[in-house]
Image (cartoon, rainbow over all chains, first blue to last red):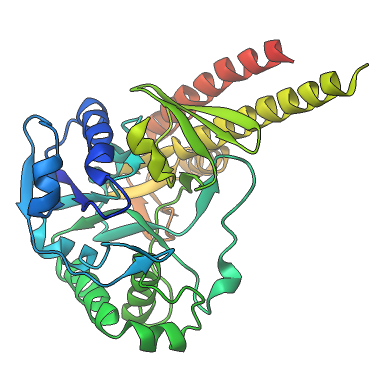
Amino acid sequence: MNAGVLLYCFNTESYRYDKIAAKTVPLLKKNLKLPITIVTNMETFKELPPLGMINYKIIEHEKGNKIDNKPWHNLDRWRAYSISPYDKTILLDIDYFCYTNSLLELLDVDEDFLVHDKVYDLTGRNAYTFREKSAIPMVWATCIVFNKSKKAQEIFDMVGYIKRHYPYFCSLYRIDFRNFRNDYAFAIALQQLGGFTGYNTLPTRLPTLPANAVVKEFSDTHIKWEMEGRSGVIENTDVHVIDKGVAYV
Amino acid sequence: METTELKKQSDRSYSIALAKQNALEKAKSKQILAYNGHLFLADAHTINLVKVLKEQRQEFIILDSNDNPVLIDKSDDFLEKLIAKNQEVLNTYHQEYQQFKKLR
């Protein structure tokens, strides 16, 4: 069975995800040593620096979604199942920095689809209390591990269906965030396909540095951040960084 | 003592407390163990359960991290892997913790 990492990378008017990929990919190569495929568009592909032996899948991405009134190209995640060339895929956000090999442990598991349903705020502020923002508990689509299987295909197809009818599902589940979020789309798909009885998840919390924690230093061993006059260092821990300024550090 | 000094001490205490908290979270997240295609946490609960069941039976069923039942037929091997993972992770945490104690 071949396994690999799938990343999505689309620059926007506001954010240079190609520069973030330039930080993400070397860490993945160093710590996971798995094949990597980047899903991108021609515009972003031209900006990407040489990243060594990795695969690229150039697609025409769907437009129209926004976050904070800025374009947000996140509408193609549901296609990951058909795009992935791997039997077992670790699908990661481009701003998930892999400082350990912990994800490799998940390759030896016979689950068709696993995702985090809990998050850990590395600033200690517990910033992610979204439970009251919707009638459904959110999952974190930042790191998804899936097999090529009927079950996983159904989940991704369902996410595609939810995306096409998102305003309806948003109202149905009383989701406060009106823009499309994969986190909620996957949560809804998992709940509905699971017969409204629950679903399997990753047993750990997703380590996350929130948006107001500004990354001040980035290396292949650590990240230094500052927030409201306080600071911290993250070492030897996988981390999802929300601050897009990480591209320029 | 000057209030600026007190503020500095407060910030320092915050940084140390946060680093400790993050180190513990890191240790917990590294306790994941894949065995027989299932995920387990190599924590005290799992180790104790396996140790107790192993004393009573050669084969037994336990629940994985998603409550799926798993037949354990090589309990010695499983227990050894659980303890190895647990101690590897806690050893790292212990070393980090010693550093925090020096920072006070």
